[in-house]
Image 1: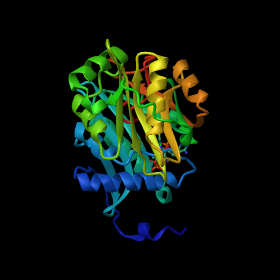
Image 2: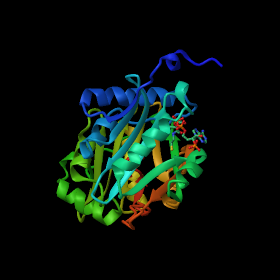
Image 3: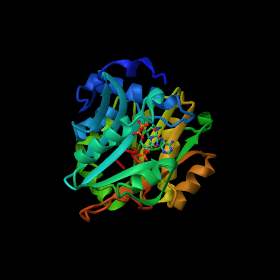
Image 4: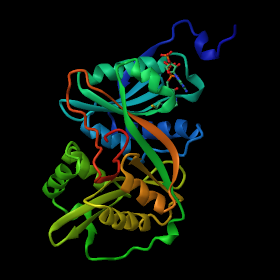
Length: 307
Ligand SMILES: CC(C)(COP(=O)(O)OP(=O)(O)OC[C@H]1O[C@@H](n2cnc3c(N)ncnc32)[C@H](O)[C@@H]1OP(=O)(O)O)[C@@H](O)C(=O)NCCC(=O)NCCS
């Protein structure tokens, strides 16, 4: 039987570790997107996602290296004492089904410890994750919205730069809309990331919602998340403004809870098409609270890694 050359070396060395350096994290983000684009999917991570996840948990961007070369990637972020999120799990397409992913997965579970872990799983892997105690809790739909030149910026005084809203006000708003667990320092850095647009919608009585659009690695794609609003009308207004502010985009991605009917109707009303469906899975071995995020106020998820 013949093996690829790399397996002919006498002693293969497979090591697992965390990438911490901001420059290396950008390179890792690119490698992840490259492998991802080699599949048929148009899903993509944002260009700054990995360095920003690392702000919450500097030991959470995990890689498996075979003889010094990265062959598998997995993000496992401990975002509180009781909760973690796992995502972006991928192995080099040329080296799949050789056990590297499983070893990285086991290291990720050990990193999360007894925390309640959330993840978005592709349908084909659900049974595999169930073996490690994960349970399905609904679905998230990945939409793509195209033809962006039909959206005009309303240039309305009630829409402001979300970066001018005090963090305390955003934190209080998040507590009432189901995003209480999003760490403040992460949200601030996420809103300020280079090239992103963050807008807030305010009435005289206070904040009605906010949203962020950021650039992806996939050719010409942008991504919205989070989009949080008190009701459908506020969400629609914010969504239109965000879509008008990415004029060079080929398409915009949004991850939407399938059970949030008003959010699904809003995106489908703009001719959004479903690219992929993922299963929301959780494992809570000590009974810690599940941050299911199933509130009707969340119109687009921040990112599959941090809910
Ligand atoms: C999922 C993935 C990261 C696993 O990496 P890997 O290095 O191939 O992992 P392993 O060789 O250790 O295999 C892990 C398990 O996944 C299973 N698996 C891998 N791809 C699968 C697929 N498409 N459908 C069903 N099971 C699959 C393997 O059979 C194995 O199961 P086992 O424990 O019963 O033997 C890799 O297949 C991949 O990159 N897939 C594309 C991206 C993706 O779908 N990621 C998962 C998102 S939830």
